[in-house]
Amino acid sequence: MFCPHCSKEVSEDQTFCQHCGLRIAEVAAAPVAGMHEKTPWEDREQQGFFGGLFKTLKQVLFSPGDFFKKMPVTGGLTDPLLYGLILGMIGTLFSYFWQITLHGVMQNFMTPQMLAASEYSVLQGASLALLAVFTPFLIILWLFILAGMLHLCLLMVQGARSGFEATFRVVAYSESPYLFLVLPFCGGLLAWIWSLVIIIIGFQHAHETTSGKAAFAVILPLLVCCGLVFAIAAVFMGAMVASFGSFGSMMNP
Amino acid sequence: MRIRLKERQPHDIEFGIIYGGIGVLILIALRFTPVVQLLPGCVFKGLTSFPCPTCGATRAALLLAYGEAAASLSMNPLVSLCFMGACLVFPYSLLAFLLHLPRPSVELSVREHVVVRVAVVVLVLANWSYLAVTL
Image 1 (tube, helix red, strand yellow):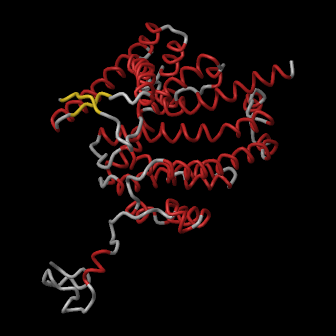
Image 2 (image 1 turned 90 degrees about the vertical axis):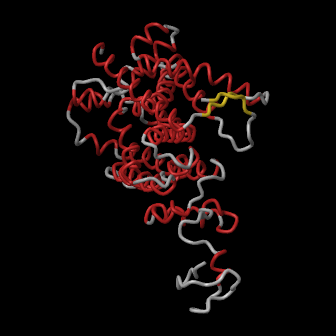
Image 3 (image 1 turned 180 degrees about the horizontal axis):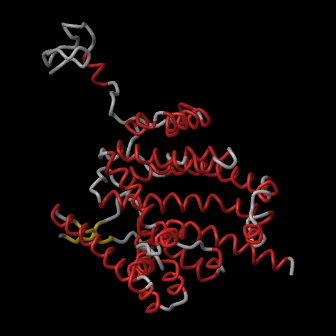
């Protein structure tokens, strides 16, 4: 065997390396690069709720490669789902907030046709507030739909080596950039692009596949199934909005 | 290929309940809410004037939600079959989960995996060709 510190040959029964003097057994037991360890969010008992949340957020946003390299690919869907839900909720609520507060400002930049169309928008006022109540349900559905679609694409390119749970975990943690929805106007685009990049990096490490296969699996549904992606999202969003619209018209005939 | 009945393991993910349930929910939403008035058009078709592989998916699901199976199949056969599958898989998976019934498990060899992959691609392309002609 070889010493993990100096890489020189040592005999099997040695506890310390005769070349560098460091303990061999301890090093072998410690986590090394590539070994999986709990994410800060999944280690909330030690890190605390907010500590776990912020550390995970920071790692996913700024060092996604290291984060996904260490992320366990099993351990249940609940923790990543909860993380994705929290980040998704924060982002969506800010998005609703900007829609309400900047509605007047946006009208200054709209053409007469856009203004006429916006008159029919039910995404305003009370409907928007009611929609916010149902947002967690929509976010959970969205995470499963997206993970399912991306996993199918990964399977097609023989890139899914770690199973569905790994895909779901990557998709849920890649909700982190949706925090940027706190920024009006450009926040949505920034979050979307950042999230796509994180998913590609995540797939590469969680499934131990090539970056090409990971990128292909992420971009394929965007290119080919654009209609389906938007339609599924719109069906659920629209169902809620349409229900509230009907509810509103019943209340104010 | 081997198909055998398998008992549920503690950490098995209930794909049938999750994705079958999503399919059924979409059909319910389309049937009982005026959601179709709020749906966007296809970006792919808007840009290229050519239908995307999932064009007509919403209309196929809408027709199925109203019980018009034949019309739904002619709108987008592949998507329509997926929704029909969801309607069958969801109640079975739910029952299997609640009553602890064994569920069928398919085991494929490496060669069979490749055959399935190719078959899926061919199926999607055939469906797309059909849409290009009809839509």
